[in-house]
Amino acid sequence: MKEQFVNYIKNLQNQITSALEEIDGKAKFREDKWTREEGGGGQTRVIENGAVFEKGGVNISEVHGKLPESMQAYFGVKDADFFACGLSLVLHPKSPMVPTVHANWRYFEMYDSEGNIVDSWFGGGQDLTPYYLFEEDARHFHQVCKNACDKHSRSFGTEFYETYKKRCDEYFWNSHREEARGIGGLFFDYLKKTETMKMQDWYNFVTEIGNSFLDCYLPIVQKRKDLSYSAENKTWQEIRRGRYVEFNLVHDKGTLFGLKTNGRIESILMSLPPHVQWRYDYHPEAGSEEEKLVELLRNPKDWIN
Image 1 (cartoon, rainbow, N blue to C red):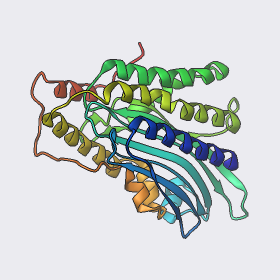
Image 2 (image 1 turned 60 degrees about the horizontal axis):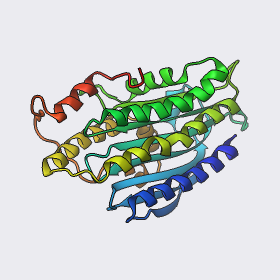
Image 3 (image 1 turned 180 degrees about the horizontal axis):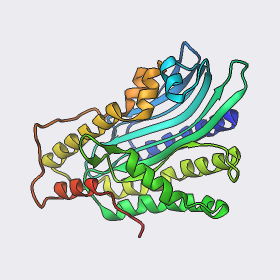
Image 4 (image 1 turned 135 degrees about the vertical axis):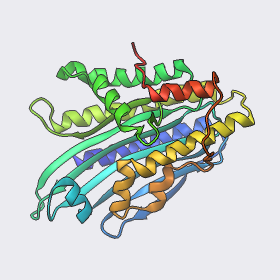
């Protein structure tokens, strides 16, 4: 399974970076190949100062070795080895009219002292973080997510979209702010073998979601990238980016896992935007488009029905 998924994410990285370069029209991805002392490595691809993307990364990693003590305590195991691979991307557009997007698809195996697999699972998802709310964009993003989920829900009698949309709203929640990071999408973790789902079934599901990413996001970029915006709009974008940073550094499991397993710091912190503001006790003007977004983030919405 791990070889199958590694091949998949390598191909997906190529597909996504090529499509993003095409729509940006100016910047190209810079690639860094790196190795991890304890085992494994990865390929980081970063785009900066483009016509559309101010900063973004589409990274793959494939790491293995002894599970650090802090993570052994987290998983409730002792003397365990692990293998983890995945593709993680974050795109911060230049225009505040184009939403930031995040996605991740990953696979994990854990081994006993004799090298036998004792546990394995998939995780991942994709979510949208707009600065100005265009409801048709939100509906489009969620509808493509639902269409991908439904291809597998019908086979296994489980409402994947409803389940993983709800988990996304719960996970990407800045509890210290009492608001969502964005308008959600899908989030799933610990997708393990069950009586009805083999690991190959989960592989088929997760790769279906990964394959849907460009259809989720690129039509929105195309529609919004040339809209005009003001200096005030840009300031609002940078203030909201601060909330994005707060979530990633305080709550995000992927960031914390990378830091605790001695991951490559440049790749881990690639998700942070280049320009951010933290205004003291800032509140958007009553009745403004900015306030409309904040009110929505405090009350996640059903975008399909």
